[in-house]
Length: 262
Image: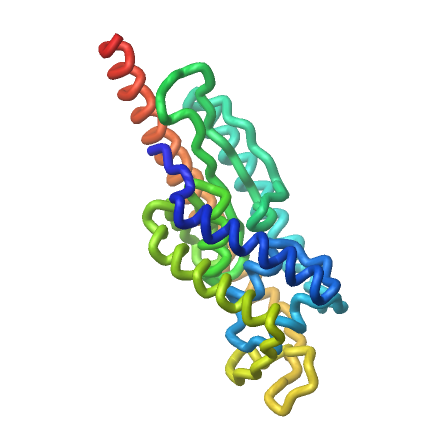
């Protein structure tokens, strides 16, 4: 189950890190690697990418969405920790853990130190989404730092887990694109490509459209999906515990083989 970053990912990330330094130097930006990965993954329009990487005021998120997210995250974290303790796992858990690819809602790392086998560390990131949106590009970025990502989709009442090994070809393809687009930005490419991403674009452009202010409908976005929150949390907890058990079983098998080989 041990899943170190494939060499191709490391090589791609090394190139991207160097190009981010060059982008900062050339344009005088203080942008983070995680921000570059996010922007270049989300926007095909080069002009929009450049605008998003520059400092600017951001629209405030309605307090309801912030509170919904925090409530679900707290409930998920407590539920997960208690379940892990019931299963006999003492695993450190962190919230708002900053990493190279972004900030995780909940991070945990299985460690079994002192055993000379290949399975001694396995990182899992849990991401909470209060609505029904499925953030594919964010999931792939987070797999650069974690061996597996579990999405708790509270609005849908579902959870889904994907491992880095399962997504490896797509991650490599995404990094290849990000690296190429980053090189184009450094060379001054500001090509404008109209599309759905024109909504909320800050640049002066004939295609730019103002983003509509959305106010939550509490009946539709709070009362109606309440029953889904527990379902999503329960599924997320089960998937994480199941993954930890697989890692633990693999570690035990490898330890036994190591003992027999002595």
